[in-house]
Amino acid sequence: MVLNKLNDILDCRVDIVGMNRPGIYFLFDDTRKLIYIGESKFPLIRILDHFHKHYKKLIKVPGFKAKGIGPVFNYFRTMHIQSNDSRIRQHYEKRWIRKFNPPLNYSTKNVAYDLSYTEFVSFAKVYDSFFKKDMTWFRYLNDQVLRQRDTYKKQKAILRRKRYLETGRG
Image 1: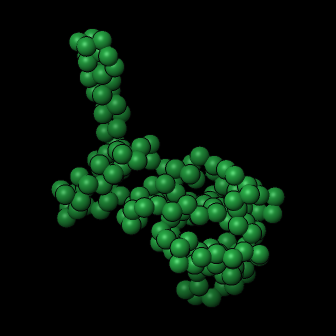
Image 2 (image 1 turned 45 degrees about the horizontal axis):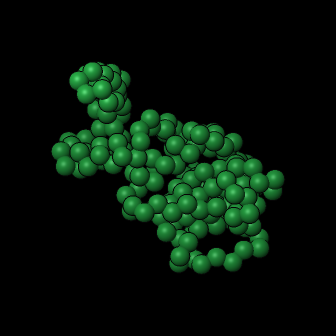
């Protein structure tokens, strides 16, 4: 990642309308080490939310929920995702978290998918066309897609080998 393209949180000027499109955001500490990855429909607002809303664990009020990671970052970077589909942003967020394992994403409950973007979009279209009324997106992805992934990969390898033997091309 190019470090000179990071935005300093204390000394930055940003085009709020232009930069606040749906996407992924990356937060860095003062040594420019990646410490957090998140996704949002409005990433700049979410970054400011992280910066200003830091609650100490000592507060014990019924119904109180801590929000934000606090002002522990000095730089940020945003990556815009063309699709307005939040599932695609979440997919990319999970893949980046799996790749970089930032320290403040330690409590994430979502495991990254082993799917390419093309496969992910295809499965999303199948879900929207056939399964949306019957089950949730996450249940479809985990129960129908990922559980059968090994069988799919084996079948694809068999077909690839067969095509290679017939045509000499893989």
